[in-house]
Amino acid sequence: TVYLEDDQERMIDMVGMGEAGAYEGAAASNPGVGLSIARASATDTDNNRNDFIMSDPSPQNASYAGGFIAPVAFVPAPSPTQTPLQPTPSFAPAPSISFSPQPTPTSDPTPTPTASPLPTPTPSPSPSPEPTLRVHPIIVHVQFGIEGNANADFIQIQNMSSVALDLTDYKLIKKTASSGAEYTIKSWRNDQQSVPGSSYFYWVNAGYADEIADLQSQGALFFTTSATVSETNGVALTYQDAVVSSVQW
Image (cartoon, rainbow, N blue to C red; front, side, top):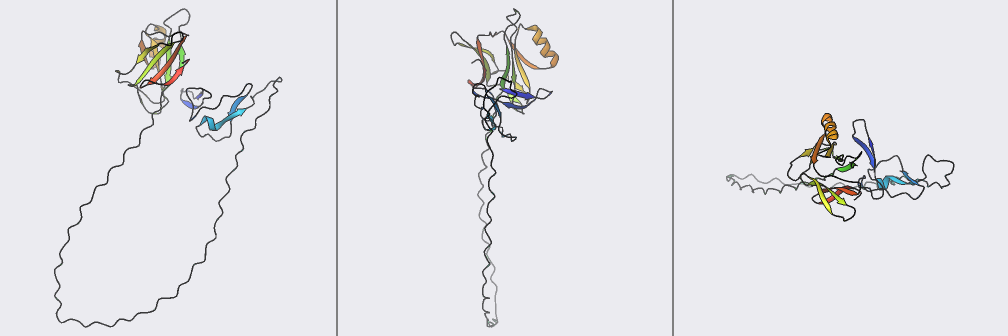
């Protein structure tokens, strides 16, 4: 997945291909050997599979001998043919009708009208609210222990939604490559913590003092536990125990 961000680290656009964990709509297909993916047109439908096609790499060096794959041609739909209006039929005027006057009665008692009760209106049921689509956060960066410091571990995660994200049902887990055993790095089930929209949050090993101090100086949201991650671990973010983003999983 490739992201384009502005100078405030807000995501402007993204494209994911193949088995990428993050993409717009659907991931674009992996390009063949020696090829790349490129936009099919200037229109962005927020669906990577529709918007990107396989193409020659650009730029190219003198040794490249591939053949260009032309973008898909877009043919405008034909304009609908207008049906001519039919002539308006003419009608003969209706014949005049004469009425004879009726004799006026000598006595015309007017009865008192009886009011009929109005029917009781039946309330209409309220429509059910439309379900809200949840936009899950994604793992952006994982750092394993560096420079001989086994505690130099942190994970950067981005809230992809423009609204605040409730972390209650999310967990960070790791999986060992040798046995496939899974372990919880951080669970927010009892934290009642939320993340502002379109922002980053972090998990940091509790012993990584330099990173903790740096995040505090930035005013960043972060969480610490004593868990560790290594280069042989896969890392995943789950929602209600289903994986929504992962690295080396």
